Image (cartoon, rainbow, N blue to C red; front, top):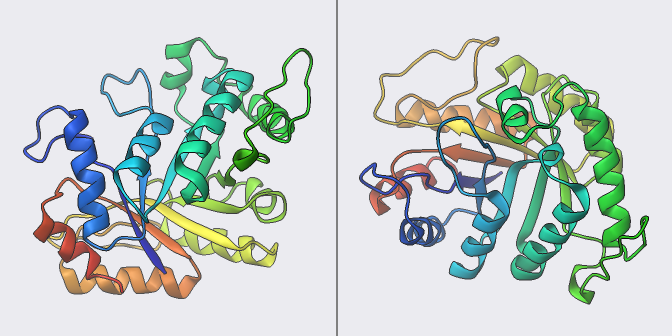
Length: 272
């Protein structure tokens, strides 16, 4: 199982993020030996995190080998033609290192902030995906035609982010390049059920993302119906990651507040 890490959202001493801190964080993640780095997506909730497509593009130029991913990009918050163009640009910059995790979104505040209807987001998501995939192939849709750069024809690898109980798991397996399930938002039991359904549907790459980690916290229990987390000692954290690997996940993406080299080395040592 590969191990990834979310990009920092603050400086190393907890102050507001700077461009230099984002770049330094990406390089520190690569230096520590992680396989991937990831950016999340939220807007209008009273705090700032970087735009995911800009952030992965910057991270890709600052590193050499890391896979860079969005986990997840909320598609209905954007206009699909403009978003398709931005994604192709990120694909051009990142190359095949880009994994585009996409989803319908689940936080109403984000939709309210940009004036998009929350209740119809699933239909908007499905329609936008179909339109963007046509545009990425160079097809014309209405008056829109993007004429993708040769290296970007077809678009990047596309993974579906969804709840572990969602019908989108089967779609992720059959029609897309993988499934991304949230550790922070899903129970252990739901992740177990989700990966089982994904494999039964013929799915290949499964990623458990947004896993909170704090190796200095008192070891907290993790009941089957509770959140998957690594707020525990090092030995317990390693055991929990082994459990994810044994369930069949191909990647685990951790979320930490500590990006010093020693802290990242301790996290990387949890699973080799």
